[in-house]
Amino acid sequence: MLKNHLSAVTWLCVFLVAFVGHPVWLQKPPKRKTPAQLKAAICCEEMKELRAQVANLSSLLADLSKKQESDWVSVVMQVMELESNGKRMESRLTDAESKYSEMNNQIDIMQLQAAQTITQTSADAIYDCSSLYQKNYRISGVYKLPPDEFLGSPELEVFCDMETAGGGWTIIQRRKSGLVSFYQNWKQYKQGFGSIRGDFWLGNEHIHRLTRQPTRLRVDMEDWEGNMRFAEYSHFALSNEFNSYRLFLGNYSGNVGKDALLYHNNTVFSTKDKDNDNCLDNCAQLRKGGYWYNCCTDSNLNGVYYRLGEHRKHLDGITWYGWHGATYSLKRVEMKIRPEAFKP
Image (tube, rainbow, N blue to C red; front, side, top):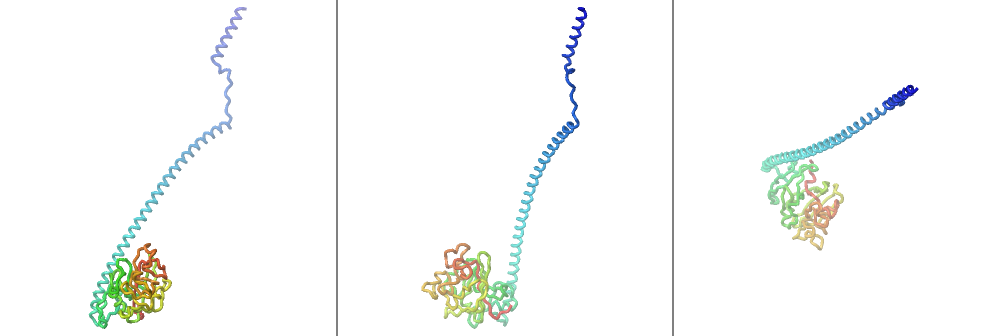
């Protein structure tokens, strides 16, 4: 009996040792995943991979965008530089063409003036620029007119405009640089002054001589904005010095607005030392020029040459009231004459 009891205890001990050494025997076997669970796990892995790929693509796109923007800025800068270089080249080309054209014109003028000297020694009587034009002198520039034996006038150097409105114009006054003062005395306005290639007054005696035949007057004007206007008069004449170079004008035409020279018609010439105007004041001294002052001006083409912006509070500039009024001084003015019967 005792032997049987010990045997049972022995087997119980063996069983306990085995159970403690291998507890897994009492655990439940792991459950197998269903197909749906396996599919969901695979899907999650694929989503993770897709997200990683999207992140990589986004990074690449950002890098490409930055590079594209950088390249675009570089291209724009290159285009701007090319345009700038093109403009500089165009400007240089224009300057070169202008200088080349000017040299050619000077050569042509010299050739024509040489030919003119031969013409003057012949029986031809050259009276003014229109006569030169009719003898095929068609380039604008400086020419010499022969002396007038009847009036006892010497040889006269003139500037001929052979292009404007058919050409044949003899320029009697020019304002374009401001290098010559027009606040001169009676003697200077009688004889003429300035540079025939720059600013000048041809001289009242010479203008009187050139207007003995029916003559037309043209006034070309330019403002500081580059706008150009003109006024023409069907008749223009100056009397002699005995009559103080009285002005006579015909009908007006042009595009400069109101006729600002009509007010000066039939008035005599005045200078700072010879007050012939119709005012108690000396208009020549007030307006700083020599002109056919009435009392005093609707125009003052021989006034002070002011640069842009300098003529805001003065009334003595180069003015044409019918265009810009009394407080605007013009940039350029040319007065020119030719016979009424002239035909280009």
